[in-house]
Length: 79
Image (cartoon, rainbow, N blue to C red; front, top):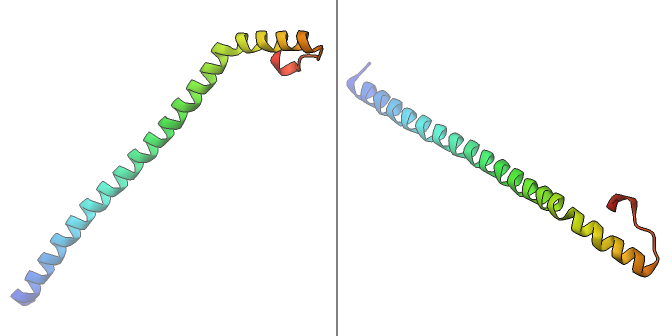
């Protein structure tokens, strides 16, 4: 192997190592972004369900008042 070939091989190796580091960083960033996105939606859905659970008695009361005023029966999912 000539010195020129050896130098080229060493530069190629250094570039390959650098690329490998960048690719690992990109993968890690993608995984963290996916985790953040999942956590975001879990929080959004959890807050929504929690808010519904918190205001459900008031909704039931309003539906009952509306049903008694209009004479209509109350749907079963509000009971």
